[in-house]
Image (cartoon, rainbow, N blue to C red):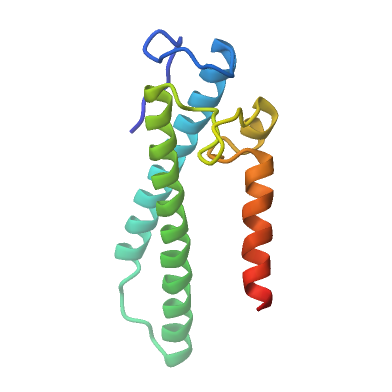
Length: 137
C-alpha cells in the first residue's frame, strides 16, 4: 500500500504548482493507487473462490465470460497503476507538472482533472491529431 503525505517536506519544490496543490494531487494519486491495489486483491479472491464446477454449459459460458471481463478490467487497472507509479516518481524528482514533450507547465486545472497527465493540453491535442490522421490512412 502507498502512504499519503501530511506535508510536502519529503518532496522537492515544484516549479509550476504550489505546495498545497502538489500535496492534494499526490494524495489523490496515492488514494487511487491504493484503491486499484484493493480492487486487484478482491478480484483475485473472487476468481479463485469461483472456480467450482458449473452445473451446465450455459453456466460455464457465463462464468468464462465473467472471468474474461474481470481479467480485462484487471489489466486496465494494472496499466493505470503503472502510470500512477511513474507519476509518483516524477513527484520525487521534482518533475511533476511539466510536459514530457515541451517541458512547459501542464497546468493545475488539467492535472486536477487527470493527475496522471504527462503532456500539456497542446502536446496532447497534437498527439491525438497525429494518431487520428494515422488511422485515416
